[in-house]
Length: 266
Image 1 (cartoon, one colour):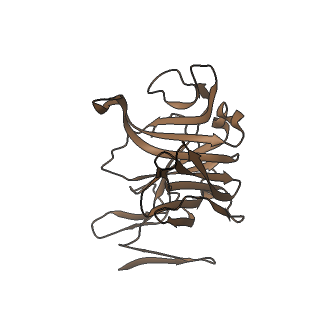
Image 2 (tube, helix red, strand yellow; image 1 turned 90 degrees about the horizontal axis):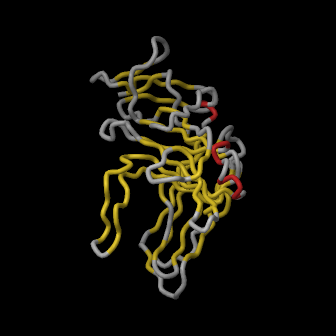
Image 3 (spheres, helix red, strand yellow; image 1 turned 120 degrees about the vertical axis):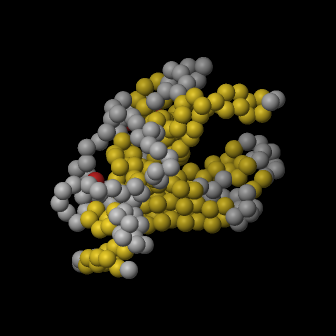
């Protein structure tokens, strides 16, 4: 059943029982980048090896306190400077030991968001907080505000509320790789019409073995492209069949006036 149809110069929005979208929960920023000093450190940090050398990447750890059973979260990242590689994942617990008894996990650290970034200018490992915002979206839409447009279904569930900022997806980049493929690079996708580009990397391709390859997603202005990195030595490969890459490209310009949160919690 169609409840509401809104038409403008660009498209048509139809709201019905099948309508699905995600709304902005919060915008996360960071006020500083500190040196990693111990396990379960939160906020933004850089890492120094025992020999005194910096590792080269910029890292984030943010505790997640929301109920995992009540909402699904999506993390879309905006970069203000070129990025050579990044990954972002939800994790739980930490490795307690890893040896002859196998992998032993502990609950230390709880549920959290972790991100690792390699900037093209590696000096930004010390000040990456100046260039990164994380837009957290949720599928849990509740009543909000006392005016505007709100659409509910027959059960009283909110399907749409105009007081939210909705996820604006501009493209989905998908790539498929057959078993035995050895390169995961692809040329740049350009998005000159996007006001403020942010991306969510949902899946990346990778191989394993003595001479593994990993895919690096590069962000440079309003372009997205991939390079690949070889690891290890030897001649053997172990490929996971049907490798894929899925990248969501969004315009977060509709969130420009939303205050950035620096509380380092989701």
